[in-house]
Image 1 (cartoon, rainbow, N blue to C red):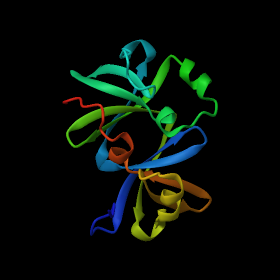
Image 2: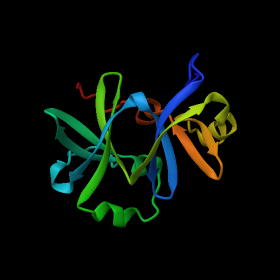
Image 3: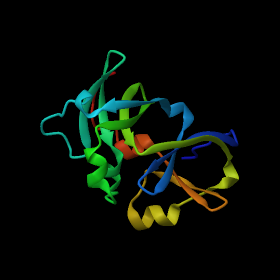
Image 4: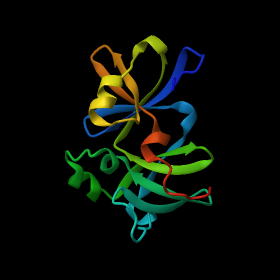
Length: 158
């Protein structure tokens, strides 16, 4: 699947998880907001990376810990204790989810030739949710296929 389709310019939102930068297509991101820990209601028997649900503009929205889902554990415990959380609200296939991020760095335009395909990495790690890696000067940004990553297994109707 080609993330760019026929258009050679792609707008992405670059965000940080731990020390690394990740990107999502701008049309998947609805907004970024801060939530207090008390705004999130835990769900019983939910997968460990599902923090809970919250009410965003009248809509019950699941909140996903992307670090937990991706297996990123550096300084993870300290981040979990913060009272205020940065949430990137994403919308895919008419489903709304919030993902916890450590920071939002940029919105940028990239071209198709700035994305390095990762077929070897996908085969080695089973990481079908990585669209490619964007190399900008000394930065490496991992472009995620968020619908593949989250598998939309939560089954919430928005």
